[in-house]
Length: 214
Image (cartoon, helix red, strand yellow):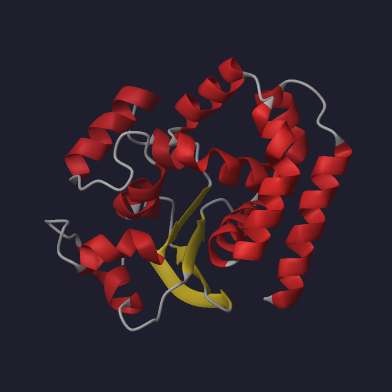
């Protein structure tokens, strides 16, 4: 399949789609944005609608794969496709749907476009996978981040969400994934101040526990 090198299982219930070039991002846009989009989350939309929104928000469609290195979505993003809610299924979408149609949920799918930062990106996407697949992990992460998120400056949160086209409901999930995979960049470019190392270390401990289990 064009843009897809292979699909492989990298851990129980976690699968990686290995890209052939960076245009794969455009192939999985409806799977990704069904969960992430601030305006289309859990809604039915066509490719033109989501690309129009990307262009309006990011300036150009290519920004979606030039400036975003990783993608992730769960079985829940595929369900409305299997239920024929989405129309005009592309060849790439059909290929992915056919691959996972006999795999029992829950499961999680990750993609890393950048070879240079692949290790960090996969770590980030695995954190999302653990957050979805393991209720205990999610609960522990919520406890660790409770005070941090409750005191997170509103202006910085709004900027972070709008810049990355995130729905507010996934804010906690994104925070934990960033702090686990690249806390220094998050401190420098998002939070603009030092984050308590106890928070970061506690998150990394929970992440390592999941690595041991998976």
